[in-house]
Length: 229
Image (cartoon, rainbow, N blue to C red; front, top):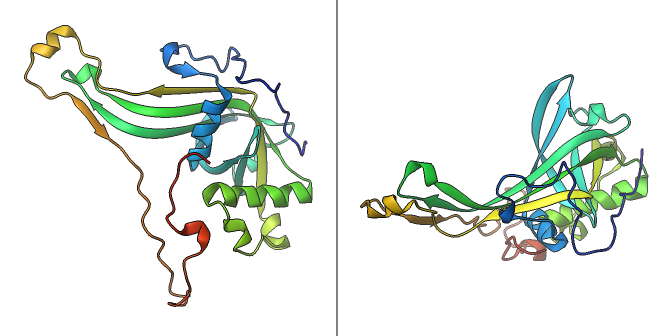
């Protein structure tokens, strides 16, 4: 088992492999490092695919990007945590939905999106210091500055939780934007065509029943929003 991710060459793009190369509509794909990082940094939930005893599973998981690795967080009793011996092959996907594309034909309806696929191996992090910094990074991914406002995990909590790393070596980003792509014959139809924008909106932080009414909202949650991190 390893406690540090393998860092790929310091260039501006990931080298596509047979596993990570986008084959369907490759013109919408990019392997640019900054583009991949931007989607990973904005997202909140990763869908992690793995195969156990011939049965595929896709699990929604909390994650964070830490440099050139993804951190995955879950219970020690989770399916992924129980199958870590020698590294577990995984496919990690993060998708951001930007719009519903409404065409004049049912066939050409689509969605505007940004997505990233990372293919690699998930391994458990065992070094206590790396685990502690990894947990803090998970919290920071959700709300920058939050880890300094709350208690760090204690020994019991750490033993109940597994922290995994997936080196970002094989990765691709894919996106779609703009209006519908119409067949010329459909432009003669009276049907409406266009885009319904999709935005994730975060409301003002709401205190729970145990928070004093005169306690201010912490800095990490004031005007909370997502975007470039």
